[in-house]
Length: 256
Image (cartoon, rainbow, N blue to C red):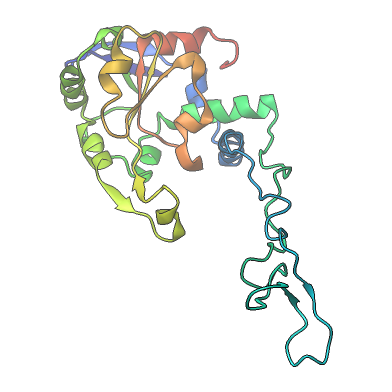
C-alpha cells in the first residue's frame, strides 16, 4: 500500500510504501486495556489518617438517661462524637492507601494495542467519527517531509497546519466545556478537546514550535504509546507522520 508525502506547503512530493503496521487488525479491546493501564499507573494512592475522627475521649453512655446511647464528649454540650454516623466521627469505610489501583497488561498485548492504534490513523472514517475536523481532500495517513521537524516558530506551524488541511481541528480544540458534576470542585472544571498528534523521528525545533497550539501533542516515534494514539481509549486520533517516523516503523522489529 502506498501513500503520498506532502511538503510543508501542502504539495505532493512523492509516493512511498507504507509499513505493514498500517494494515494491522483493529483491536479496540486491547487498545482500551493499554490506555487504562497507562492512566491508572499515574494515579497516586490516597487514604485517611487511621486516627481521624477517633481523637476524642467520648464514650458510650448508659441507658435510662433519656438520650441515645451514642459516644458523647465528657465536657461541654455533651455533643456526640467518635461514631461514624455523627458529625466529626470517623469514616466507616474510608479509601485505603494500600488498594491496588494500577491495572496490568502484558508486553505483547501492549505492542498489539499500539500497532492496532497506528493502523486506525490511516482510516479516514474512523478519524472523522472521533470528531476531528479537516478538509475533504485530506488523504490518510498524513505524511509530511522531514523539513517540518526543523520549524522553530509557532506562526510557521500555523501555516503548515493550514496547508495540510487540519487547521479546523485546532480551532475546534480551542473550545472547552464546563464539566458536569463534582469534578468542578476538584480542580478539573473544564473539559478540553484533543487535537492533532505529530509523530516525529527527531526534534530540531518542532516540539517548542507546535506545543502551544491547543490540543496538539508532539511525540518521538520511539516513545509512542497507545494513549497518544487513542486518548480516552478511543482510537482514530488525527495524526501527522514525518518521513523519519515512517522509516522507523518500517525498520523496527516491534512494528513488523
